[in-house]
Image 1 (tube, helix red, strand yellow):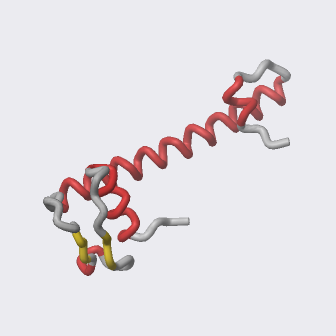
Image 2 (cartoon, rainbow, N blue to C red; image 1 turned 180 degrees about the vertical axis):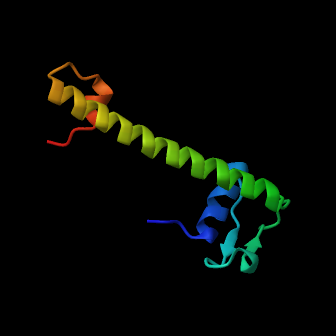
Length: 93
């Protein structure tokens, strides 16, 4: 499920400042988001967007790594060769 822009902003802010306890209101259009900083210093929009980009890339890379492991495990099973532990962990029995 795709995260809303509000959820992405909240996660990025929390990743940049673990003590942040504010809220992000709005989920559809980025320009309509309202961020409650709860008395803390605001983080620049450019820093938040950069963190969102980095978090999206990390999520994409992790999903690709799992897909690659599954493909490698399948190829090894077909060839009858030994699997690594990570490859074996991708198999659902």
